[in-house]
Length: 215
Image 1 (spheres, rainbow, N blue to C red):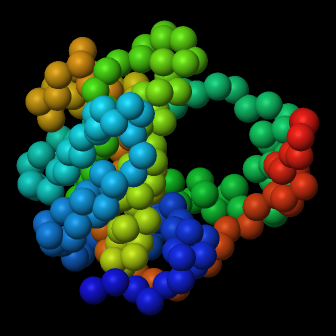
Image 2: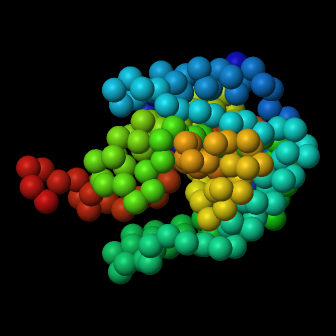
């Protein structure tokens, strides 16, 4: 069963869901499999199809993975914010505060999330040139976004996080992933949503991001 959403509604209301994940309801395997089937219809560089989706639902394995998520989250990371970053983050009053409030809620309840989806891509790009980076990430990101759209259409919520990155090697060990051959691209909590009435997010004006013919 899928939600009655137009293509535009599906694209504009597939939100990062943190506080409205239903932590009491298991996600049927067949729904996840349907989402993966749609995900792998995404474009892939040179038809290499190097994507993988690791799904964690077994309670003890979820406990181990949730523990890694929390410890990795506390390490933070990422590039420092620029003035433009801060301006965009605060263009709509309260929007960034809501994001971080949702993140705190997710961290406090990560052990209760019924399923984790951890997409991977064959071929590490650590310190690789931009051309190689673009090919690898361009062959996993479209598939994962398709997965998230398919999940939304089925009443499921997702949120892309990269909290696994500081402890990727440890997470790979728990999951049995050959770390030297496969990059774990993201850490995606998955659950049914509490309600399905999601709306488009406030964004900066189109004029700030749309460029014609030159910058």
